[in-house]
Image (cartoon, rainbow, N blue to C red):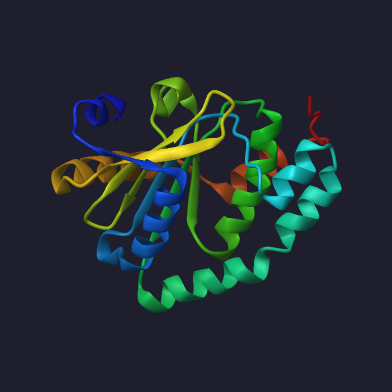
Length: 200
């Protein structure tokens, strides 16, 4: 998929531009839904209270702040169901998970219970994480390749408006989704038993 995006013409967006467009378009996705592929194993999320607690070593505080999002996520899930919209995520996970990924999988487990459909795939199935884009499709179009700096902080995105490209990207993500494992069973087996991560 990365090669497809490299070969296509897109428009570079700043981080605020991407967030604003995403908020505007998300609830207009229609029958084609929202599909997200996330492959990088470590990110930084300044501004997210739970991530910031995790980053300073407050694991119990980070988990409490994830749980505090439950009601909002449940409301989002209810709205998705009422509108008949699908919101699907594929997360590539190398084992053992990085400290960041251990934190994110707690959040994704809650998201999977409350709002989106979340599946986990191994690199053996999806390919090496570094070879995959961080990609989102919204409805019939557009596709976004989400961009991060070397530390893993969101920088913005490249928007691709080509409908055929979005169809191909959506189908590739959906194929991985169909081959993946539901977050609930994966989390119970691989993440819940882990001790708190060591943050360096």
